[in-house]
Image 1 (cartoon, rainbow, N blue to C red):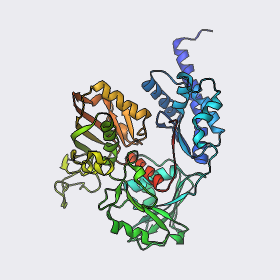
Image 2 (image 1 turned 45 degrees about the vertical axis):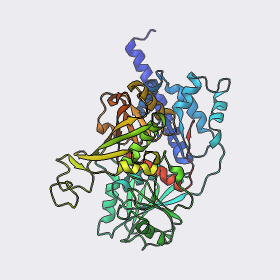
Image 3 (image 1 turned 120 degrees about the vertical axis):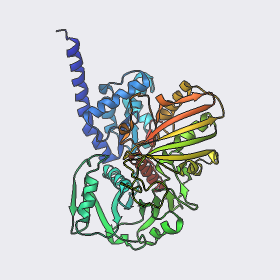
Image 4 (image 1 turned 180 degrees about the vertical axis):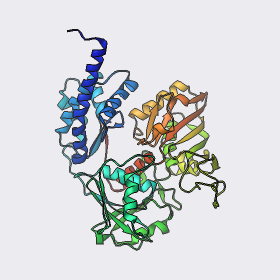
Length: 480
């Protein structure tokens, strides 16, 4: 019986749904039980729906000009699920596409090809999990909690043990749990959350989170809760220098401190993907810089490596933040006292100068400013750069696409060629920044780049990567 075009399409769609349905439990099991994160050309598949898995496969056509069928990638996923692997991020799409369409591993069976490509993570020993304490439970603290809970399982190398907040009143624990459960920007928590008031504990998807009430970083004995050598992630922004952040290290059961805001003094400002190797085992206080510094530095590094940067200006169009007023009221900073929900507010940013802390070769070459706008999340950096050599729009975009797909910055830099994308489309992006290629302007040795970034979630993903580096956790992305 000859099928009509409509019937052929429907049959093809049902086949894709079937393979995506079969992939889901394998992907989940690999993640929970082995610490293996499966993605397709950088698009994460962990906790992805059937439709999201299908859509992730469609991105392969966008980048390669050729389809990767789910029935093709499913064969590779099944083989991976039977291998004994160390925790890693595995790009199933690249592995399958290279083997099928680019003759990588030619002459080898699929099993032997995967053994060759994944050799560095086969049969390795795990490491002792790192206890993590979130000091402060605001926007970034709660997103970090979601990311750490998402990674919970027998092979979780970062183990969320506690959160610390200021003195609790009646109903405080339920309020904290409710804010973790529901988020106006990032949507509902994917799972189950319960509260144990007697023990001051939040239980979330198998993660047992002790809630500790304290007014000072040096007033807690974490060992009372079975916590040892903890990495304290300070999300409060109250303490920003060695003396202040050093208070954490006076509490029993701590070993290192990570600040999720720009730091002062001689504290190392780390942008993962650019200078994380500057972190030494003896560094016990480190800063993850700002969301904007994380968004622009990887792209600036890529541009400087290829074209050289004489100088430039970075203008940030930034969503409003909690330090602004909802309605007009007194504020110690200029302009920030005006209603954040009603105004574009011109303000300053230290992000351009902070770039040089992670990328010293750009010291003194960049200026910056910021405009806060009436959106709750997702921001944009507009980089006006004078280059050492001339280029074209096509050459520059092709280069940044290659950076996003194949370079050491592929986890930091994403690339879109959509002419319809707007800020809300980037909510939940796990990249430090997303190059909007359709907005790129090039005139000889002058280029203007537009880089989107989820200033909450994308930044939180960068923070987790710095946490792994501080804990000595190797989490490679394969294939190389």
